[in-house]
Image (cartoon, rainbow, N blue to C red):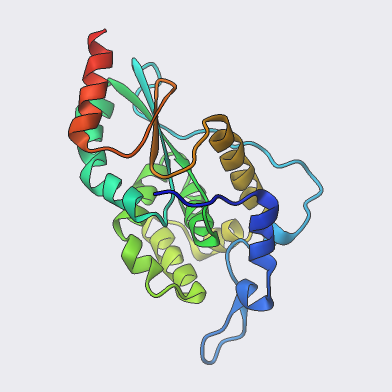
Length: 222
């Protein structure tokens, strides 16, 4: 799935373009900030590059990096149809070290990433899996307020308190560092579409489980 990517400046502009992007209102409620609103604020510091969350054994013979967007239907399909077998047969057995790297095509993908990363390293892959599994539900009709509410519900299911979610999803420095990290990694690996797989440094496009297993088995046999 090829989609244009956002620079930090462009994504910041999108998040501040018009007050309606920053606030939403329900009947009987006062306006509340949407996730990522603080991204527009100048923190005065260089964004910090965030570390990868590793799934599997750190010394596994194969490293597999997946670049994916939470709003990409092909990425949701990969996580439904390919990832469970990949995890059972290669990650859990110590053959593959897996790294999921988030790609932000839009503000909703960034918000979803903030929920996943707020959950912390121990819960990250569980939350990211919930986000992919329920992609159609939390995106719904594309209403920003509803999406924010739906993502907060996912965070709550993962054990995050309302206070933790509020603090996390209005953390401008965190949002900036996530976008900066995405840009740095995606540019280094020349990622133009999602999902993109980097297997021991070699770039591959989306593929079926059988195709992926064939590549992994060939590397393991070397």
